[in-house]
Length: 353
Image (cartoon, rainbow, N blue to C red):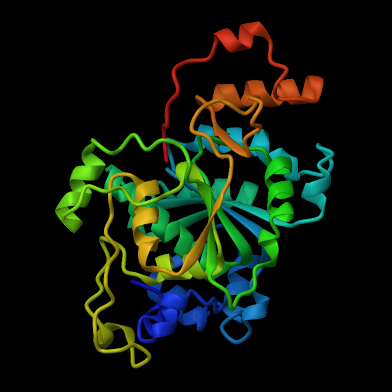
């Protein structure tokens, strides 16, 4: 069910002003939503303490959220940890921009029957959370809800200046990204000003004649595609995360106050519409919210070594990630791949989320 602070947010017009306020009454939220971190007692203790003191929540400049599938995506999670996540390992990489800012990578999975495997992985790496009240999606629409719930989880368990959502097939050039965010002063957003939605809004939209347009027409009467960030990766300020997290998810019981306590209004919390295209869903959800869009070079193919030097691109899979990182370790650049490695590249795909 939606978080307690989100239900209150629904009752005031300030929601559309996109003014950020930290999550409140966190202990009650965690119990109500059934959301809990796994294998991370300090996180659970911090969440409990934050019921009285929001400042007790772990705080990061950049929160990186990666929706995942518990069993089928284990190899991809390992590939991320062993490759571009190492930019944040000061003992492995000399990344000047990475030293000046704090970042947290968090994989979020749905409820898994084989609980022990998830618990062991979470205990080993400390970067995995499970949504106890939401099973892994079996459809593209379910994947959109998974993203919404992942954002909610991050908001209720952490404080952050910006949230970056990426797919497991994305490669994040952390040095480039952090330099860009610094140059654009995006870590220093005034909470009293409208939030920011950062991504690739400029590239051609290939969905204009697709099922996405038909879905939009059924909902809105128009096939016009709203402006949205493409490429599977985008950044959101906390107020926009609050808006997305506070709305009901597609499969939630949003039937109202009798179940949720006197802090809520009597009216049910509305649900956000889930489209098969999660990126498009985010753009649609934010249309009514006051915010600024910031263009960033994020691409949907393997173009990290092109002249435009994207902040984030996409690779074929775990093997390609490992090849990139091996090149970085050997030669100091992911762009110095051998011709043999280039020939091994398969067709671009967006497996997983």
